[in-house]
Image (tube, rainbow, N blue to C red; front, side):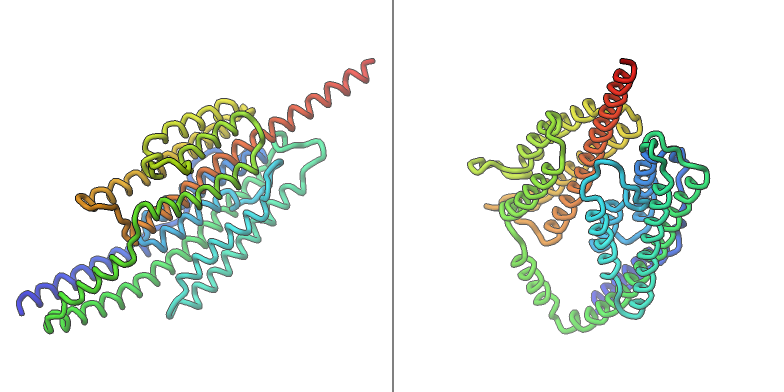
Length: 397
């Protein structure tokens, strides 16, 4: 009986600490813009927006519960970063379609928290997010609508009023996302409270009746039945990654640096049929080749913009970080399966792998998009320069 009471005390203590963390997360965060240089021209808007949003998302995520639902939500926000102030640049393929898809992903993630008493509140706040998204599209359209015929992305200077509209719009977006997140945290704390109370009640009954061993046994059996072998997970992941790489390659210029990059990507992330080495083992041994290919692309891009190169460097670091995370997950799987004939992945590890691969796809896409846009801008500038030169020569003759 003493053991039951002790277990009960620990359970209540754990529930109290968990709820305290959730409530404090609900109260701490206040959105703001980092102290960085304002965008001066149209081409500066996207890198500025991405930098501001990435800092905001990282800071907000620190204050939230470390659950899979929140991780998925923040990944959606990161993927949407460049569309917060959606100024479409020359050469950006499928811009509107991708923007709508990513916005839909965020709204869907928000809706997943709309349960119980706060369902109506979250739905209302989601509508505010949709309205803010539309507002930012109108700001971008207004800016681009004022462009003169002879101006391009590099020469169109933003007025002080336009800079103010962009900054205020981003802050407005951050504010509504913060409010939605706070409501989501409140939803989570309410669910956790109910869950903990229910759990506590079952622990007075289960322990007293001596059913805990049976319960644990059933849980273990259920966990075992939902586990997959590492080989199964690697095969499924490789299929998804292969489709992603092929689709991304189609959108890119047919230039040597892009070909080299995608060859290294395929060689690391897609296994040849006869090769026995698994996905995780290939990543560990060939990650350096991906980094080298990205470095080559960075060195050969036509853009001279320090901002573009800085963004590409940041995305490269994030790509390599996700590969390191996959290696860490694999190491944990190997460790927990020591002495066993085959390696198995728990459901939790399967989710971790899926989330990390999604993150890898997002930052890889961002890296490639920046490089492709830079090439397109460089080609346009070169073409315009050549055209102007030819025209000048004709006039001189």
